[in-house]
Length: 167
Image (cartoon, rainbow, N blue to C red; front, side, top):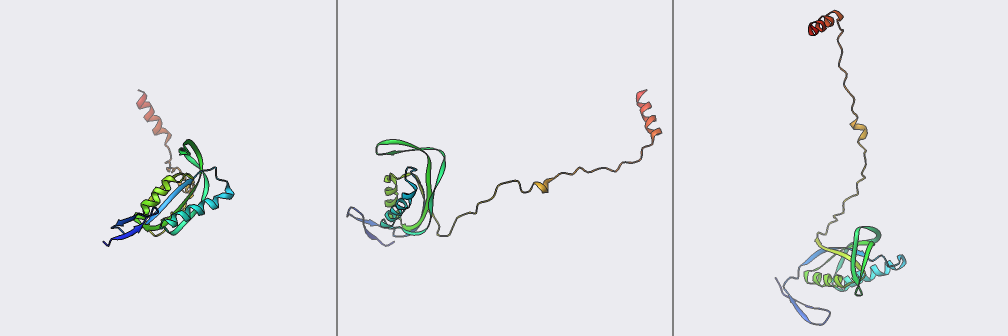
């Protein structure tokens, strides 16, 4: 592989042997204390910071307020804070592996994020459609008991069999 020199933010030259681009997806939960009217600015600032670190955006989803499945804690300004709600959003981008490591370090230090998950993925859309859950097949599963055809009973034969059993 060809060697590439990159200049990092502090001005130091870094030799990297992996100049191959990879596709990453970051799912993140932003702190709920951000007012709804300021959320767009915070998302733009986050995306601008990722772009400054070499990310080329493919797709994203604007964050939505969600109730978290369990309470999460995060240390912000040397104070442990607990969150049960947060703005969940995601962004998919392309960058080099070296820039991916720099972006990970940036996300680790970002105090506006409760938690994030950065994964390698593919360029194609991996979104699955939401399925409606419910009992739509209930009408197909009805059970109808089968009735057997009854033969005409001969009363005399039945009486003889009962008498034979009783004696």
